[in-house]
Structure formats: structure tokens, C-alpha cells
Picture 1 (cartoon, helix red, strand yellow):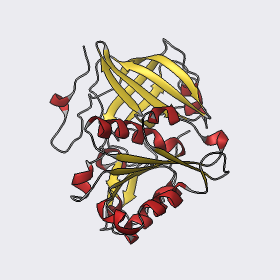
Picture 2: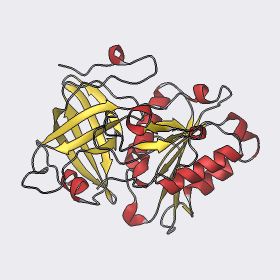
Picture 3: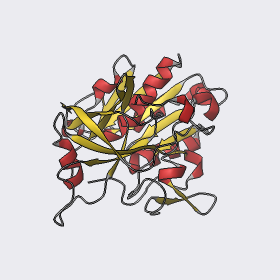
Length: 293
């Protein structure tokens, strides 16, 4: 069955994911700097929207005999294309523990168990800011993944975008090929590429003067970077959306492992109310336990 598209997209922009998980087949696993780009064919799931994520687990060598990893890992989709046999999905990952280590070892033809697409996607720039002249994308490290598919979505609709990408050092950098045909400005803390410093330095310069009034910012990266983006945008009254991360066990909102506090009080579950949220909805983007191993 080919991948489904608009007929499963709800009025709020979310895609209705099939319950349970299904088997995809790995078609490529390629190095990208210090990361890996794993691509799998999903024969029956719907096409994702930019900003959504999947719960992933390898079909073989996952759990069993009391060994880690036990639970699936949440990954934003970095690229999605439809072909005659389903959806072709790419994920950007870094080997930092037993779960990501097993996924990094996947070989062509192996099974990849998929649940998704899940969560709330990005909003269009004019939905964030009626005066928006385009979009500013701010990515840090492995967090550039959902911005890559968002860039392609914006480009397909003729919406101008500028991508600001930052990395800690050369060993923790990669995924730039996902931003082909895009205006990309780089920052690195060790100075190996672009501006020596933080990617938020580039954002601060870009928001100087009148440009803040016509800006719409989208960011994904480590919590400290997201918090810096949130503060910068709040100080300049710039609408922004953050693709946040928190520990997840299910992806459906049942476990409450990804609950984060809201500025207005109470909590939201990132897996169903996010992972993309308005920056002004949260008191802080410093979520404890973010990251998956």
C-alpha cells in the first residue's frame, strides 16, 4: 500500500499515525561527519509533517535476555519522500549509547520498527507572525534534523528561509548535506567551521534592527541552545517555535515521561502537545533528561 498523505492530516496540522508499530526496511545507512543518516522505506504509514517524530527500534538485537535497549527511541524525521512503494524516511542520529548504537549499526535490508508520525508539527511563518517575510531556522548539533525537512517544505511553497546551524566541535557535526540548495550560515564552538562561537550569536545579529518585526524563528537543538533562542526572541518580541526533546517511552501520551511545565501553569506532554511548541508557552526550555541513548 502506498503512503497516505492529506487524507490523514487533521485540521490542527497533525498527521494521524496508525496504532501499533510496523516494519520498515533499511535502504541506506551513511556516515555524515560524526553522525549517521539512516534511511528506511515505510510501506504503509502516512507521510509525516515537518517537526513530527517516530519511535524507532531495530527488529533484531533490541532488548531480549535482559539486555538494553528496552524501549524505542524518539527521532525527528529529517527527510521524507514518497515513491511507489511507500514513504522513504531519513533520520539523523549520533551513537551515544545502547539504543543509538544499535541503530547506527543497521545494515541495508534490516528491519526498522516504526511508530509514527507523532506529535505536532511546525506552523507556517504567517501563522506565527502575520508580518513574517520568511523563516529563520536555528539548529544545534543533531537537532538540525527536523529543520532539514522544514526547509524543504518551505522551499516547496516558495517561502524564503535562512538556516543558522551550530556545532560544538568537528567530532559532533554532520548532516549538512540535508540542507542542500539552502543558504546556510555556520557556527562552531571550536572554530572549525564558520563563526567561532554559538549559533545564537548569528541569530542575535540577524534579529538586529527592523528585521525582528518580520521574523519567524524555528529552533531545535540542545536545551541550553533552545533556552538562549527563547530568551533572545522574548526580549525582541519575535514569535518562535521550539522543537523540544524530553524522555519518552511510548510517544502516545500514556506514560507522562515527557511532561514539561507551562508558563501559564500545569504541564504539557511533548509527544502529543509538542514536540513543536510556541516559545512563549514555556517558562524555560531547559528540560532535564533530554537526549536518548
